[in-house]
Length: 172
Image 1 (spheres, rainbow, N blue to C red):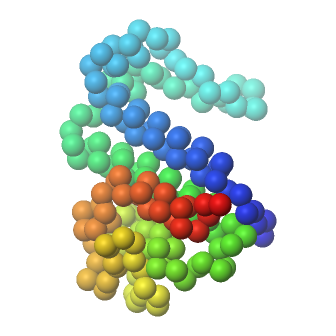
Image 2 (image 1 turned 90 degrees about the horizontal axis):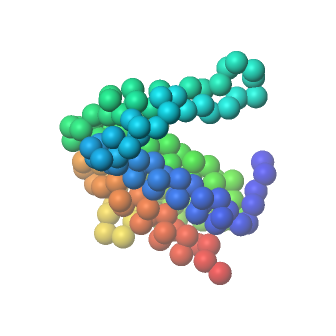
């Protein structure tokens, strides 16, 4: 397994990309932004290395199908957050210091968050082998099978959790 002691730059890039996705989710629902996107090319091409197999983004169709209901925005945020949490977990798990900090309460909290993101956004554990705590939040058996972002966290907490872990375990 490749381990690295400096994952901070990768973490910053992932965080920036996640925030851009969230801005996009919200901004595509603003009429002025929708009009601006509709005025662009009808298709945006994401190049593939395979000739003729490029990804074609139908920008007007995407804007026309952007839903404005709160439930649909939250569902999209849940998906984006799950992807972000999974990528950040992979960075942490491959860090050279992971074994040393793996059972720390914040890391365990993060581990359970990552697992929940992979299981339909529900806290998914049969027992809590180690304390899983972050700030004033502690996972207990009563959280089992509850939605992460309704029972204990809000989407913005994810960034705060990563900042706290970075400051506590990786800041020089």
